[in-house]
Image (cartoon, rainbow over all chains, first blue to last red; front, side, top):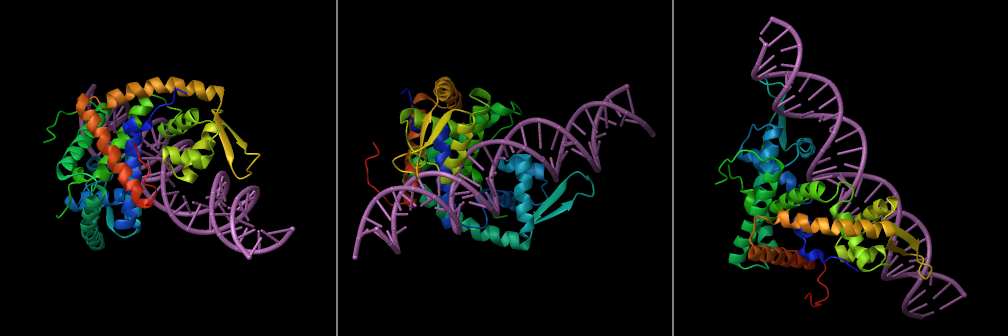
Length: 153
Length: 153
DNA sequence: GGCTATTGTTCAGTGCACCAACGAATTGCG
DNA sequence: CGCAATTCGTTGGTGCACTGAACAATAGCC
C-alpha cells in the first residue's frame, strides 16, 4: 500500500489540465495551429521584430523549443525570419499578412474555448482560479533564476 | 495590435505551471524518474496486477503514452510485465522490489516538493486551488467521453 | 464451430519541452 | 587593437503526449 492520492498533487493536476486543454483546443480552435504556436504568433503580433530570445521570454519557452515552434510557423508561411543586419546573431521575426489573418481568426475562437474550459466555475471562481495559477507559476519560475525584482504590475 | 494577454488563458497558465513543476521535480525529487513515471508506479503500488489500460485509466494517460512510460520503467527494472495466461492480450504489471523501494523514497520527496511548489499560497488557498484545478480538469475530461455519472467523491 | 466485434498492445508520425554542447557573431576588457 | 567572455541560434538526445493504423487475442453471436 502506501500509495498516494494524485488528485492532491498540483503537478499531476496541471498535466491533466493541460491535456484536457489540448483536446479542447484541437476541437474548438484549430487542428493545424497549436496553442504554443498561437502564443508565439501572438507575441509577434504584439511586438513585431522580436528575436527568438525575446519571444521565448514573452511566452516563457525554452530557446530550443522556440526554435522548433518558429521553424514550424515560418515553414507554414505565417512568420518572416530575417537575419538582423545590425547584429548577425539574431533573427528578426514578424508575422506575415497570412500570419496576422490566422491570428485574428484564432483569437475569437480561443476566447470561446476559454469560456467552455472554465464553464464549470462561476465568474468569481474563474478570477480566483486564474489568479492562483498565475501566482504559483510566477513564484515557481522565479525559483529558477532569482533575478530582477522588476515590478510584475 | 489586437494581441491578447496570455496570462488570462488557462491553457497557457497550465503549461507554465507544468513546466515549473517539471523543473522543481528534477531538482527536488529525481532526475531519473519523471513525474508521470512516478504516477504510473504509484498506481501499480496501489493495485498490483493492473494491465496497461487500467493504468492509463487511473493516471489519465493515453494508451500509447502509457506503453512508452511502462517501457521505460520495465527497462529500468522497476516493473515486471508478464502476459496474462488467462487473456493473452493483456500484460500484467507489478512493481519489483526495487520499484517499491524507489516509490517509497520518492513519495516523501514529492510531499516536500509540493510544499515548496504551493508555498506562495496560504493553507486555505491551497485547498481552493487544488479543488478548482480538479473541478476544471474533471469537467474537461468528461467532455471527451460523456460517460458514467459515477460519483467522483 | 466459425466468423465478426471488441479489446489490449504496439508502431509510425507529429509536436512540445528540456538540457547540454557547439558554432558564429558581438561585446568588452586589457 | 586583439583576444576572452558573452549572447543567439542550432543540433542531438531524451521524454511526454496525442492520433491513427496495424495486429493479435478473445468474446459473442448465429
